Image (cartoon, rainbow, N blue to C red; front, side, top):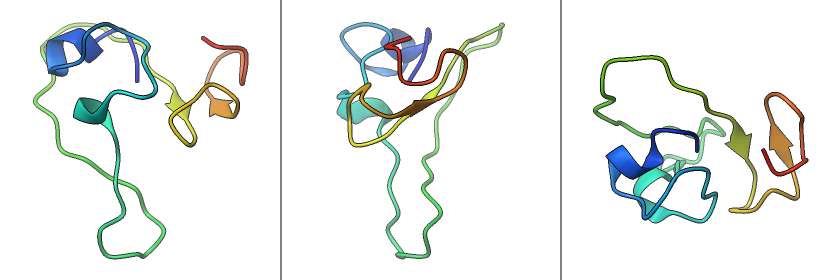
Amino acid sequence: MGDLQDELGCAGDWQPDCDATALGDPDGDGTWTADFTVPAGDHEFKIAINRSWDEAYGPAEGTGR
């Protein structure tokens, strides 16, 4: 998730529970992926685990953004 989620179909930005930007592991190989058409520009993002900020990776890990 990040500051471009609203452009990708979410109600707002920085929403770890938005289905439109969720990653998946359809083949079960442990690599989570998704395909997005990202608008041009500079964007911020980070990875949140289990659709919440309880565990997150990126600047200020686990602090909610």
